[in-house]
Amino acid sequence: MATAKKKVEQAEAPFHFVVKHQFEFNERGSKITDPDEIQRVIDDGYAHHCMKVAGTGIVS
Image (cartoon, rainbow, N blue to C red; front, side, top):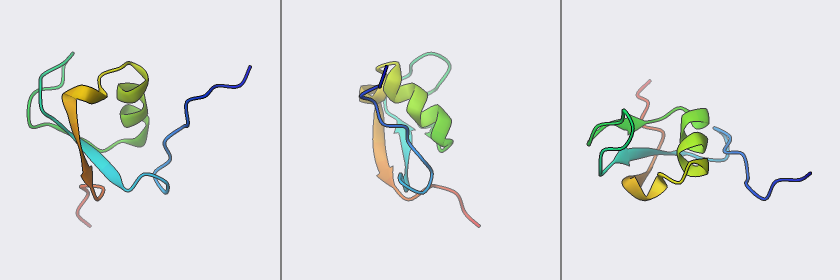
C-alpha cells in the first residue's frame, strides 16, 4: 500500500519549524529541526501550530 505522504528528508527539506501555538510538549518559540520530528508533526496534523522557516536552524 503506497502512502501519499512524502517522507521529509534532511537534504530535501532545508527548513525547520518554530512553534507558534503550544501543542503536546512543544512550547511556543521552540525550534523543531529533526527531519523525523518534522515529519511526525506534519503527519499528526500539528503543522498549523508551527511556522515554516528557511534554513535548518543548525549553526555549524
